[in-house]
Amino acid sequence: MRRKDWILLGGLLILGLLPLVGEAYTLRLGTMACMYAVMAVSWNVIGGMAGYPSFATAAFFGLGAYTGGVLLAAGSPLTVAIVAAGALAFAGAMLLGAVLMRLRGHYFAIASLAVAEVLRELTNSATDLTGGGMGLNIPLSLSGGAGMMDTATFYFLAMWGLLFIAVIVVGFIERSRLGFGLACIRQNESAADMIGVNSTLYKSLAFAFSGVFVAMAGTLYAGWVHYIEPPDVYDILFAVKPIVMVLLGGLGSTAGAIIGAFTFLGIEEVVWRNYLQVHTGVLGFLVVVLLLFLPHGIVSIGRRVRSLRAGHG
Amino acid sequence: MAELMRLDAVSRRFGGLQALDRVTLDIGRGEILGLIGPNGAGKTTLVNVVTGVHRATGGRIHFEGRDITSFKPYQAARAGIARTFQVVQPFPELTVHENVTAAAMFSSGKGGLREARAFAAEQLEFVGLSATADQPAATLTLAMRKRLELAKALAMRPRLLFLDEVNAGLNSAEVEQAMGLINQIAGTGVTIVLIEHLMKVVLSVCSRIVVLHNGALIADGPPSSIVSDPHVVEAYLGKKYAQMAAQAAGNP
Image (tube, rainbow over all chains, first blue to last red; front, side, top):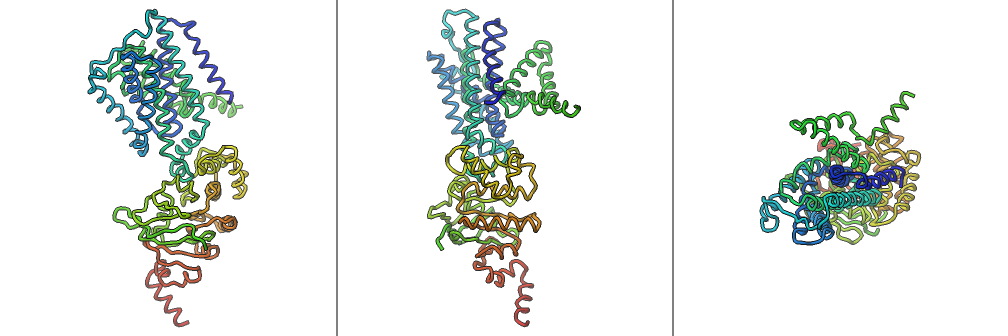
């Protein structure tokens, strides 16, 4: 492992100490930060490594939220619900990937965007199972008689743990045969085919890995907020935000994805509190400015400073 | 000569265009076969069909006795068929060494990174790119990229190698070098199909030449008989010149 990987893991471990110092608001923000980071780190597998601009994050999140939510409402333990949501998302992505991943560029982006819409309609119409447009209540039983702080701490640690696992798994993928193959596919897909990369399989795996942890985060989200409805969890913003976060932090880098997610959430909170009327406009403006002046993301700042110094020194 | 690949009435149609028209061809083990023909004759399409980029719309292809007609590109690669691209296709961000390592690694179903790296280094040595091994492939000159293509193809341990215009865009000194490499590769027992425009090159290295014209095979034989074949001359130079050539041959 390289030095920056240790820094990344160390930083993550320190983040896990948040419940020792945090109040309810900080913990809520921390949970959101970890959830966003799970999405961004996951998106990096399909978008950063394979070079396929997926808009399917919202679909995975909603699928996970509803799979987990329905199971939780039926009384299954949280771990079972999480594993089931992850497994369903992985299997679904593998099947769907075999079809979707034949498309390239814009066509793939549009098709992946449609997945969330289809799932939302399905969720809406399966009223008996999901409550349809009425939404789904998830009982509080999970946290038992525990107080508000205990619940907040529990969900923060759960989301943080999920982020930790996602980072480890994605790190392994990066160093594996799969990661090497994805890098080849991103740079020149026909050449990758020609040297023996099974690109359909690899792209489907990348798609599945970009979904599995997001679906698990969806289940945690459902348990955390106790009430979900289709427009909430299949929100198109869940598809767009991870992409912005990754671009903000630095495409293709796990550390970049996490930094991007935290920065994005920070900006979002500050802007939302101070410019309630126009907050989406201001947020969009800030994102555009950041991307214009830092096209390789926040992780490239160090490199830029060094090259500037070298240039003037 | 033992047969390595057999094409049996292989056709490929793109909409209204018959790009390959019932091509029947045997490729013998160990030969250097020249595949020539005017632009648009279907030479690259033939390579694409054999390597699974396009599926044949008719006919069958056998390689080492196996039916590979419906193979995908990665399956053809793992079966032992390699090719270079007419327009070079490196992985631009990977280093030269990583490019070749990828070829060594993915062309065998499994295998470790370490052996792949070592084997890749040998291929770079062979084509003379060791000095640039750690540079990103995007920084290479065209002649070097052509050699990188060759190294990638060799790293796949092919038994059949299609070289699609490896000499296009090279100067005569570079062509000489490339021909030297091709002869050396052939010496190791790899069967080579050479797609080439430079007749001088084809005539000097190939033991047998086949000619494609409008997707159909119009001639097949040793170099000496190909150059005097009126059909070939006609396909390349036009009917009028073929008649003039025939007349000139008639009254010296």
